[in-house]
Structure formats: C-alpha cells, structure tokens
Amino acid sequence: MEEGEDGEQYLFKIVIIGDSAVGKSNLLSRYARNEFNLHSKATIGVEFQTQSVVIDGKEVKAQIWDTAGQERFRAVTSAYYRGAVGALVVYDISRRTTFDSVPRWLQELETHSDTTVAKMLVGNKCDLDNIRNISVEEGKSLAEAEGLFFIETSALDSTNVKKAFEIVIREIY
Ligand code: GTP
Ligand code: MG
Image 1 (cartoon, protein in one colour):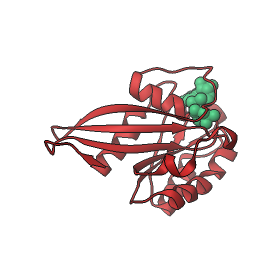
Image 2 (cartoon, protein in one colour):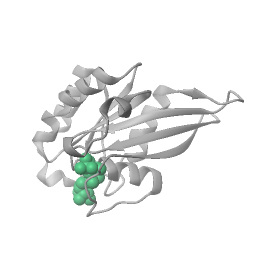
Image 3 (spheres, helix red, strand yellow):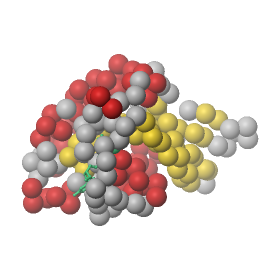
C-alpha cells in the first residue's frame, strides 16, 4: 500500500491466482478495458494493469497483477506476491480440478504474502451453467471455511466482474 504526497492517493496491489485457463487474464481485461478474448493464449510471465476507482470520493488506484496458472510459465513467485494486499483466487465452475486446486493456491499465497490480504474466491464462467460442476453452495462453503469473500463471475458476459474487483478494493481501503 502506498500513500501519495497529498495523502489522498492510494495504490493497492492485487494479485489474480488460479489454475491455467480459468479466465484470470480475461477477468482482468474485462475489468480494465472491457475486452474479452475467446481465444486468448496462456499467460507467460507476469502482466499488470492499473485501474483507478473512486471510493467515498477518493481516487484509489489498483495495480492488478496477472500471472500464468501453468508452473512452467510462471515468473518468480515471491516477487509476484510481494506487497499484495488483495487477491482473487479463481476457479472455473465447469472444471472440478480447478476448484480442487484452490487450497493449494491459498497455501502459496499464505506462504509468500507479507501482510494481511483481502481475499475473494471467484467461480468464473458462470455463463456455462449448463455444464456446471461446482454448485454455488460448494463455492460458498469453501469460501466460508477459508475466510474469503465469494462471488461467481463471467468474463464472457461481464456478470459480477466489476463487483469482484471492487469488493476487494473496498475491503482493502
Ligand atoms: P493462464 O494464463 O494459462 O493461467 O490462463 P487464464 O486463467 O488467464 O485464462 P484465460 O483468461 O486465458 O482464459 C482461458 C479460456 O477461457 C479462453 O478461451 C477464454 O476465452 C475462456 N474464458 C475466460 N473467461 C470465461 C468466461 O467467463 N466464460 C467462458 N465461457 N469462457 C471464458
Ligand atoms: Mg492468463
């Protein structure tokens, strides 16, 4: 967290984590640029976007970091998490394996974070309700057990994307 010279600007680092292809990069592009890519490539290394949000009349800047879900494409893990005060932990509601990985991602976050982190469990691709494998209830109860917020999103049709980021930003602020 950083405070600007005038004491009115804040920069918060938020990380997005979760298995490959759950939609991390599309959640970020939908939020930051209102863009969605049906054929996006796996992320290699780290990317980030800075997004301004006005909360209670003050400008808050969120620096949102996105990395590869695939181990072999990931950058230095400790640097990725350093200074993060918020995290979106994403799974794909149509793929059970991505939900089963959530505790592992939380463990990695726990290991590498240096402060308290506001965490949101995100069940993405809720537009794929017809091939859903994880119920809303299951998502909710995992979030409750682990002390996270919970939301289902769709980067494809924009459902709750803004809300997912802004609940975390508001909590940090
Ligand atoms: P890595 O960079 O490999 O970790 O993957 P990622 O988590 O960044 O996934 P990415 O955003 O690249 O999306 C993977 C695939 O899922 C792409 O084909 C996207 O178009 C698709 N996708 C992402 N979000 C959604 C969504 O909300 N609904 C649907 N139906 N497809 C989505
Ligand atoms: Mg990606």
